[in-house]
Amino acid sequence: MARRKPPSTHGLAVVDKPAGVTSHDVVGMLRRKFGERQVGHAGTLDPDATGVLLVAVGRGTRLVRFLTDLGKTYTGEVVFGSATDTLDDSGGVTATYDMDGLELATVRDAARSLTGPIMQVPPMVSALKVDGRRLHELAREGIEVEREPRPVTVYRFEVEPTDDPLVFAIEVQCSKGTYVRSLADDLGRLCGGGAHLRRLRRTAVGSFTVAEAAAPDAVELQPLRVALRDYSNVTVDEPTAAMVRQGRVLPRFDGDGPWAVLDLDGELLAMYEPYRTTDAKPAVVIAP
Image (cartoon, rainbow, N blue to C red; front, side, top):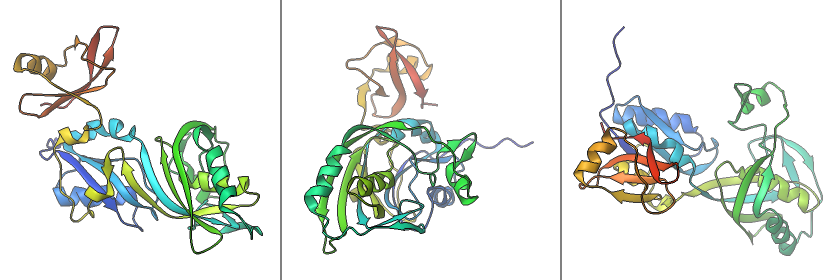
């Protein structure tokens, strides 16, 4: 059997995902655009959602887990008075509520109660896997399974009124793994009825914002070192760089880590993490 040729194109694409395509669809688009098979995204966006999707190419795919760990910022609208089976406006209405007279102060109080460390049950319509199957696949078959609550953190949950008294604009800054659809559903229940989410847009992943994102067909690759700009960067001399390329354990760098290790030319060599009490070891070596 012929061996697959190693990737020759490496980097990070900051994509502004359009509505109506899946995150996996975007990966396929970039495989064709850059002529590489080794492409992966960091953090799924719902098909109807838009905004920042970080996509790694070539050796950059080894860094996906560090990109996934970055916090996220979203905007959207919460529609009060109706709940849906998907918790957003792509699903069917499961219940309606008379919520006329809902006040901004009430919604903001509910949002404050959902801010900070919370336990959140993942929605059935999500990409999370249970026993090897994605929840949305089970949901399409009419199967609902028990989901364990998971700890997430909502750092900021802002609410503003709109021209519609039952629609409120939100901005949420949160940890990885947070479902904004679930926050909208919780907000509805805490306000004495029900609600669902619409117009979800991810405006930032870590320091990567929509201002620097581009459509899949227009996006350009950024150097691998850019992918780890939200982490501590350490520049090493050539003798140390040679040890990094070999995956050697090194004395711990300053700070708590992890550390993106660069050579004197500013090229990314590896990601190191704390090891024992005085050392650092490679989490992933990027340099060939």
